[in-house]
Length: 378
Ligand code: GAL
Image (cartoon, rainbow, N blue to C red; front, side):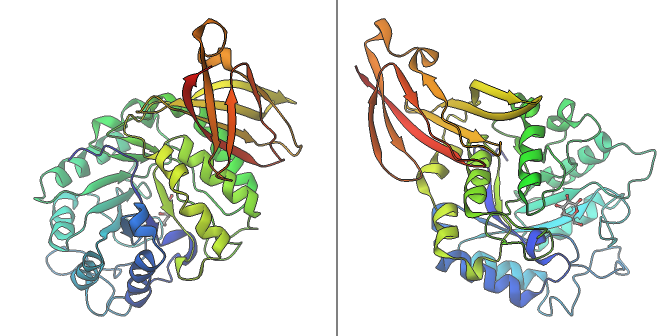
């Protein structure tokens, strides 16, 4: 199985934690369709940790908790598929999951077979409670091989938080995406810290195995399992823009059954999603960066898209408004090129005009701007 674009979907952890049920999952599947998320490309619906009983059955197989999932996992999976979605589940490379449920260490092939039987299309694979003599580098390979031989296409989402030097070896394991950073929580500091932690790793991102910056907190409003403080609407827009521009998988974490129109407008912005899903999947590049007090304050980014357009973004991580200037010469435009950039604002939808020498970008504190530029005659 080869994965060409960053996976998009929804995951239960951020809002629900252990408080998951068949009813809630079915409602989420319905909501993915009704809100238009499915049609915008969000296709995976993933149940995270805490779905099983605390004991395996007499054949060593994982058992879905019958109180939470009375119809069994196959029925839940069938329902998710009936909505035109793909079904994701969770396990871990240790003896217990992070929330201390049975985990897949030494059961990799048995569990992969169970997941295949249940119609699972996506496996998030965590990294807690490993026996000390078994490095992640080995254990992720064991599950990667088990999944590749289970008889079903299952996307392997490795979740080892970027530790143990994983950028060096994660692509050996068969992972299609890998958590390149620690856990997100719903506040601005977390978004900022994950962004900074991602910068040195951007060069390792690429088709086939995407850097996963962790699930989105957009729309959580400080509520739920990781709702520690919440963010402003502008901060959620900045978070979504950074994750999109950096080519991260986008796994929604809020309760999509009751999103405000403003939150829907963020998650369903087709032009921002198109930058994330661009077929060429080129690396973003930093055009200019300003540091204050040793810390990155804001930066302007470019990204060459498949059709020759240029995506531009400015992320302002600082507490002050700013207005950086982008010199077209930094893109090889203006001057003797005879070419300029026709720029469209991807958040307001406005056509801003044709720029041949420079482009000044006003960005609020904690804010972002995102644009798409078309190369035209000057
Ligand atoms: C963490 C993981 C989270 C969530 C949690 C479940 O290790 O990073 O995304 O899956 O475990 O216990």
